[in-house]
Figure: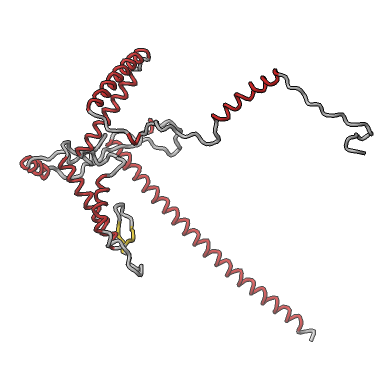
Amino acid sequence: MTPSTSLYGFPKPQKVPKEISSSNTLAFTSTLTPLISTAQKTSSGRPRPSKNRPNIFKTQKKTSNERNVQDVQNGSRYISNENKNVKRQKIEAVDEAILHRSKRKLEAKAKIYAQMKRGEIPENVETLVDFDQKWAEHQDAGSDSDLGAMSDDGQESLIEYEDEFGRARKGTRAEIEKIERQRKVALLSTEELGRMSARPAVPSKINYGDTVQSMAFSLDEPVAAKMEELAAKRDRSLTPPEMRHYEADKEVRTKGVGFYQFSKDEAVREEEMKALEKERLETQKRRKEREDKKKQRLIEIEERRKAIQEKRAIKQADSFLNNLDNELNALEPSK
């Protein structure tokens, strides 16, 4: 098979060049021209920023005229904003109660700040920051730096002390001295605030409610002397208490057989009590006599019993001897 023939032996057809029409040429030209123009304009690199972009770090200082112009512009803008706000407030009304409450809270805060500036805060107010303590710690920081450091071997002696709450604690000598200094500084600062304050401090000991105050007022010396003289002349004998007795008619219950109703008259009551006491003594006397008679009778009975036993024993012994004698006599003739 030759190159000029095909697989089946047929000759290959010869290639005939195609004729390009004018319409196809114009269409190709119109399509290629915009592609070439766009390819020249675009680039594959990153776009660079413009050199005319303003830099905030390279702004020049404004002159006085420029500042005046800027102030006028800002003022006109502020006035326009105020007008807008006024219109907005007219549209959206605010509750008067909320405004009044906010105003009162701000006034209370302003008073507290003014008192803090003047140093008129009482001691019982729980503020978030203790300025006196901070000042004392700042003063003691420099002087206690060498005292608070431990020795090289770390074996500093511990001393037992009592804190402000009465509890037993242990600490070094430097710590104890620091605590004592803090107490003194706090006491001095409190006294200084009390002297410098325009408003007097709140008393710490105030009695509220029904409280008996024996030393609420002080008497003058002559009045006190007269009262002592009258107290010395008065009768110091003990006043007898009021006689109060049991009243059976005020208690609703069934009384026992041995219940006795005393009279409400004191004289009659005394006589009744004496009669009862006499009857009691007589009863005890008769009871004792009866018990003595009973004991004496028991003794007599015991003596009679012993005598009867002795007689019985003698009688039994005599009968035994008689029987023995009879038996012996009966055995003798048989022998």
